[in-house]
Length: 301
Image 1 (cartoon, rainbow, N blue to C red):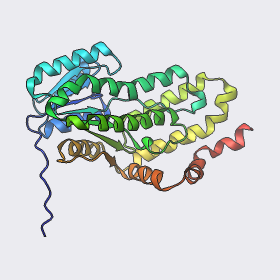
Image 2 (tube, helix red, strand yellow; image 1 turned 90 degrees about the horizontal axis):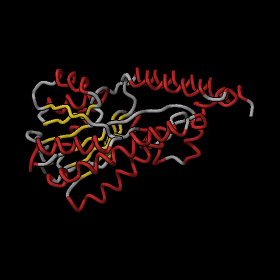
Image 3 (tube, one colour; image 1 turned 45 degrees about the horizontal axis):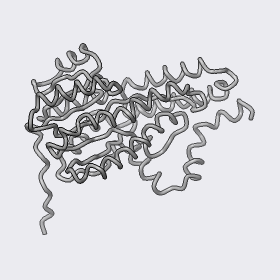
Image 4 (tube, rainbow, N blue to C red; image 1 turned 180 degrees about the vertical axis):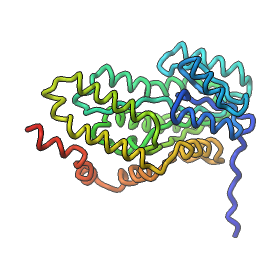
């Protein structure tokens, strides 16, 4: 018997909006989608970022759009600009990629910085999706939310980031079930560690939080947190997963005849998703205890 598989959908003529395309994975993904034939509206925060991105594109199919995912007026203007350009065809897909990563012991994270990250990583994708849903309904299109392995397992010292990723997973499930009657699908892409410039920013922000915090608290975490940062950076640098792996996975989610609800990118993302389903919390806790172990002998109670 022949194992017949439906052909992937053609990207030709289909419009995709992607947020956070100024740098990193979002930039690589926007360029990949454009080169594969999609008409890409790449969300950027600054005009100069858009100019650089357009210069790297292979055709006029990529168009930068100024977009702040935390600003209501910005989102309204971006949605109106895209709607005017695509007309009755509507937008085929929205890729919610914009996000930030805050790494620090949760006890040390200032509430205002936590709110800022959740505003970008959770509230922002909801607001962007709301802004573009009229166009997505018109095309019976797709939403792809970018999460991470931290949406399955919360690592020590990445609690603020994991909080947003867990919330994004729940938000995606709710949207998927609510939008199904309108023919709009929702998928989550979960990349693991990938070597990008984000890790320098993660270190700088984390060290700044500890340096500004009360030493009687920050001192309890400093040694194991520094060890964790080094481990995280080494893991990213040695990872076999590349930005193009991420971009290709997003492309599959946008062109699959029947898109999956979740796509993992990289062995560590697969491992996190699998272990979170199979192992009890107590076993995961023991496995992750090495990350914080240096704290015990240095800080007292």
